Image (cartoon, rainbow over all chains, first blue to last red; front, side):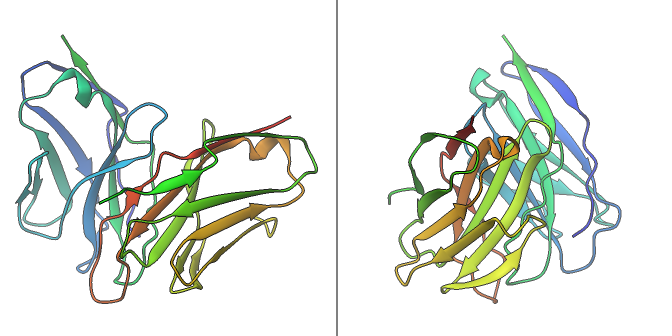
Length: 111
Length: 115
């Protein structure tokens, strides 16, 4: 699985959009980009995933660059409950459920 | 639909003992993965079971083992516990299969403390 690089920490004001970047320059053509978050001492929560097109769901939007070497997770209107560690994960082939977690980005929402 | 459940939620064991943790996946999910989370090593993949067969395995010693039952429920066992096995053990389930990539849903974890 390709390696990902994320900033260690970020702050965002409540109500503003939180933009979390991720670099995955060695991603291969059949690998997906997944985002999970973990609120303190809870199990990680699935947010969104994509292959090459931008994706949006009720939680967030995922923007993947055309060369697929980086992506941005956007939380459109951050709330205090969005304070968590966010993990960007590149996942391998079909039938491989293994998630390789890095150190993630600790996002703090400021009131 | 009920989420992933893990039992017990908290456990205290002594060095040298063994422990069994249980995970019930979301109904209809056939893949169950196990992860260990520690402050020093972060989240690390232990193994994954699909249709009662271990399909993937991480880099953990043989003291860590698991199994999956025909109803997709899974157990993991750690024998001869060491202090370093103190961790949050997380279970995740997904539809699995070889025709797509499926999101995984995590349980709340079992907090194991070895004394």
